[in-house]
Amino acid sequence: MKKVVGVSDLKVSSNANEVIITYALGSCLGVALYDPVANVGGILHAMLPLSKADPDKAKSKPAMYVDTGLKLILDQLYDLGAQKKNLKISVAGGASMKKKGDKDFFKIGKRNFTVFRKLLWKNGFMIEKKDVGGGKARTMALRLADGSITINKKPMK
Image (tube, rainbow, N blue to C red):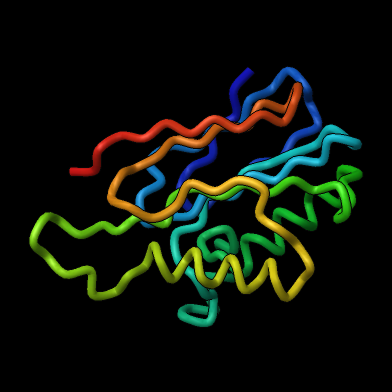
């Protein structure tokens, strides 16, 4: 069974028969979290780094932002029995969306990853696997049966 995570969305599950997948991770950040003891996991597909950019939007769509999205997915995983000490965290995306020859003025991908790393550091988490930066879109999948993460890259246009 497949659960698809859209942009500015997240999904969690405790069903070992499910695969959670998200597509088109360009400058967006895909964050997969998995607790092998509780056998629960989830993926967040965050579009922007900080919710303070638009607090009203963050209230209605917290998964749009790295900071509020990370808090929300952690809360949902803890509700399913996950424990902080067991969480395996993988991240993908954070690419540059510039076209050849253009400047990446806003550096959204880089900023998304920087905010994510700072949040993990402040809260005592470590990244286990990462595939970030560059100029390629990615698809990220988490298989709940064993916590394996797959990432496929496609050239960005």
